[in-house]
Image 1 (cartoon, chains in turn orange, cyan):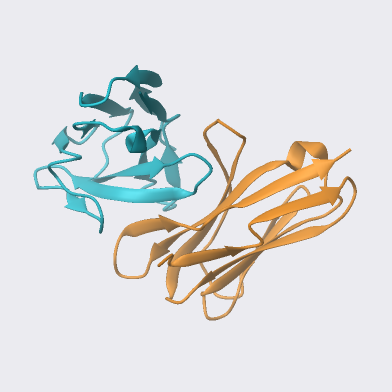
Image 2: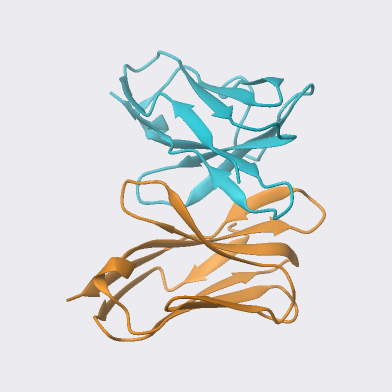
Length: 111
Length: 114
């Protein structure tokens, strides 16, 4: 079974709309990472969250980690076609030094 | 930060053959990770490679199929043995940042098995 679940699996939004992607784990996470992958390309690091309740923003993207460190959300404000791609959450499982990835969310932004 | 170079970037292989992917890091790292990304899928951890010890494989991956070498702190190889079309994937090498814990990735090796 997947240890990191992402939702939704895919998302199509109109340019300018806001959207949220969720990442949930059944285990406590040591660190939570968000990556973006353009189709057929490498991974681009977006943000890392390590503390419960932490929130970080970069340009129009905001990521939050809940107090229990088991759930994170990625919010994009006023989406643009350049935001399109696959968003992946990744995490280091506490006490394992093992990094795993979520199921991925495919985002398409219509101009 | 860490810069990771992977070779080959892509290859087309025949069924039954083996291919070795190389991963070179520009700094010394303790742990290196190998991932597989099948078409349209997320990343799946194959194994963790520590220098001087046997790689630790995840469930569903075995050493005979995916032998890994880690001869020093900056280099690792992953071999995909006796390939079948189901092995067609992107294989990614990654390392964790020493201070930040951020995972850095190579550009990946895209394998197509005919």
